[in-house]
Image (cartoon, rainbow, N blue to C red; front, side, top):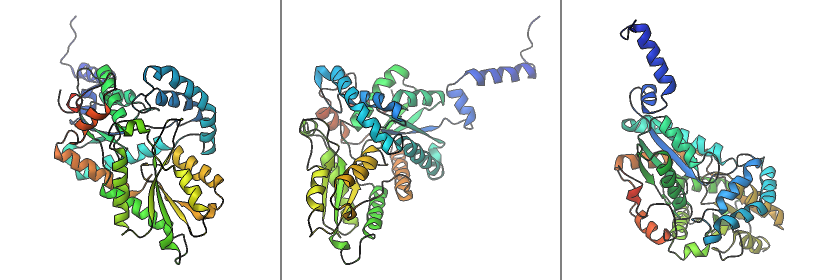
Length: 392
């Protein structure tokens, strides 16, 4: 006897079965009212959410030749350094609560941005948030596979490094390309990228607001004399000497923030988190603070984590614990809040993505030069951004 394929029970059963087993575009299209979601992908280095994830995080970090180039010794030397540093870094994570909050804040910020975009840019709605970390879970391939299951056909890679470096944003997009070849070889997702935003209005306003709040904690008679120290993650001089744009773009952010404050206070840009014996960008945050806070004529210091979009170990431990423990006059030192859930900041991110989507731009005009100067030694990745971004 032939099955009656025109019967309602058969059709209903078939639809249920298809929906249950098909994890591709059709499923997502049904779920979103017939329109595939636009993926908004926050890309960052990430951090271990638990202390148990620390070794894997460090191993991926030190084996990344785009970040810290060791040449032919990349894998064994990276493994050696990761193993050696794990116990100390695990202890640091325990001291800040048992893991990095960067995943929590990245997911929160991205979700809020998508909620705003659904209202302000309905032509590309619905917008669906994803987080793709370079060294911690969720990894790039995790986000990519989730996007494919959700039926995403258009995605924005949104670098959460406001200031571009080939060693950070460049490394993230290199990994996106490698994982795309593995997990989306048919190139079903059309990508574009926001690869830098050092003077975005929301970013500048949020930093300015946080600095004002912290300055207000000092007595009025000394408030204008307090020194503002903008601290950014340092970079090996090997990478700087390739022509990397990071130092200039961090300085551009600092200048824009101070301009918004009408240059109310003396300020400097300093650099933190140097690793290993090779030369890195200086002056180092800890050394500059040590020099200043001991002086009687320095009334106070405000530390500003200018290259970070949320709290993580470099703010919560390096600035909040290590700096304070080493200081002779910790009462002089205050730290401006990180971006975290700052509404000005999140609104700025949403504006940035909206403008990007409406512009039709696939990547900035700077990215080609970044690839020429920074990508000489990169392996297994694209030589020109058009190989990754745009239709294929």
